[in-house]
Image (tube, rainbow, N blue to C red; front, side, top):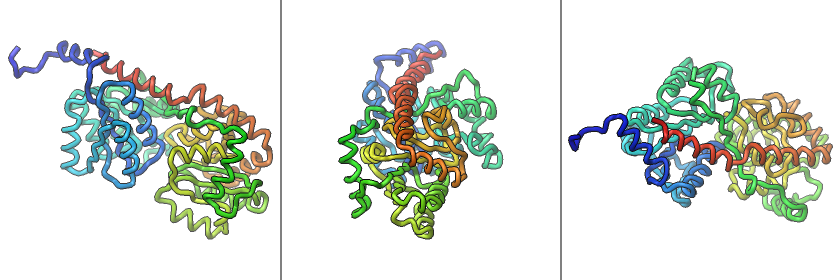
Length: 410
């Protein structure tokens, strides 16, 4: 064969099979979000696992937005090579250069459409790189109809043709990808994002007794009363998360539950709106917007909480924050959206309510706050549920198995 000739197809397939074990290459993860949420935490934990398990260089392509700077620093600290690539013509050209020679491309889709996402999929296909796409959001799974004037449907049809394999983070999402967007059923696997039950775990009684007054005192000086009921929410502050419903429910319950304190951990574009709503409702001492917190601080609040509430209007699948709360043995209230019932299959595991109904949320909070025994039993059942089927280690192992299957394919 001439030195400049391309290997014929069997030779290329054999060369790729040599990568299945032992060979060092480049695995490129792509996450194009402007802000941090559950999908980005999943990418961070997966990248750390891959660094530990493989000899390959693990790389990440992400946006240059400053809101994700701390996330990028954490990834670099564990050995991930991070490329900050702008969605500009020169940035897209750089994306092509980075993907050239990658052993595998893993695109994490937290928004259904966009030139960046489509360019990455097209580039992987053009370069004949094995490509995997994790669908952290499926538009029709939460909207009923495409909100992009049909553009999302055409984009998804393109993904179905371009990408080698797909991960749906719920069975509901898989059903939509296959039924609505006509994806090949044999190329779509359900792998829940999962959480780490060794990091998120219940506090012992003495630890919890010390934790609660410390956290309350730090966040609400002068309010470290033993009788406070801590109702915690961890969510990005966006309309998606239904936090205005939580403020409305807190207002309805103010007279009945004077010791309740609603701690909302997270940040986002809805913060000014929420602050105004809290102030207008006279709830400044009741609803506390605590801002972003480290994973360790989040775990502490979940261990200290009496109740966890997530009133989302839609999700891509069972929410990571919900899994974390359940792993901590916390009783939970969530909305029955986007596969959440796959995580909470019955009333003994958690309380599911309709989305967008503050009165139903208020009623569920009132019922659980008034029944400590039920909260305790629910929290225990919730942790059992997460450890049995939503352990992040299971997610990582199954994802790596999928990588290896793609490398072995002819």
